[in-house]
Length: 230
Image 1 (cartoon, helix red, strand yellow):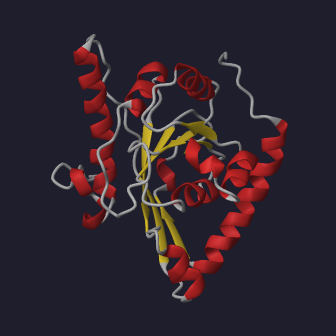
Image 2 (tube, one colour):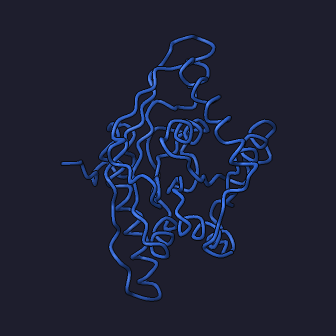
């Protein structure tokens, strides 16, 4: 796949509809607030890195993000009734958690080089609890190949009991998106085992900044390393 990636027509039609529907749904169920939109480098390629607690994180982020995002999603979710159809309708890029897929990375890199912003969960999957797990080095590899900046996006309130609290108990809980400033990761010049270690350090660096945007109970393994915005 070359750098001339284009969003297929069916997704250019379906995405605005899905984004509108999900914005309306979240506004009906919860109190949604967004801060930091001034940090977005509009009309340029970048990577949005989120903490990933539950299935509600990606649709919340994609629905309320000011620009249309390309999204990476776990392949196993595509097999679930309802969820799979929604992912396919949006055009989510499936990824097998924990596997290295050269074709997948080639596709992701072509998306970014073509100028499209990409949403990714560096942890590689849902934590199922508030506290973050350690990131995988994949995000650092993508940055290494594209030179794209990373925007940390803290997603708060989307715990796995969100649907029960919002729809069944009518609590109208708060949901919050906090957008951090763009991060340029250090260049990687080493090889071999040292390269893998350098990629892990860069992935961790993204999470340090993300932890700095999150409440303490969300920081998990990055609680002692959070970098707070000045």
